[in-house]
Image (cartoon, rainbow, N blue to C red; front, side, top):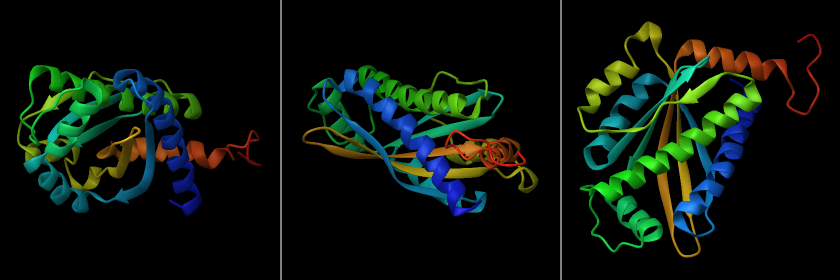
Length: 207
């Protein structure tokens, strides 16, 4: 993947997150900003340790992407994330802990649903694909088993985007790690579409 292709994917994600911010503002009852300050493309062997590290001290929310493209998003919420999001969105003063009550869990699921849904909608619109996000769920099992499911073998290694998303309102800012898994076939489809268009309103010559 070239730097230009990376920039195009980053911009697609940024547009999707900008739309998510509008929905997020309704939940938080404040103006919020969601952006992608960093976008890393990781190989499978580099992600195994990172997911296990996150899973040890973060609440993990999983959502699957289905349809023409196949993928999975994982969002990781630390105790500080839960504390600050509870204060911003629920007006609750809680301790720094990933042990959440039913209301807090619903909030984390809704945040994941908003962000994943916005990304899926943006990908579908720009890439002309029929895709949708499955309802998110809280992952409470072994992250090693989860990774075995997402990365079944070397021959099927997916490409993984690691995104640090900024959620901020007037007085608070929270970084939300988001990992976006695409299997190899899906990623090749996306690159083929990107390479066929200049995204400036005119199809590339010969495409």
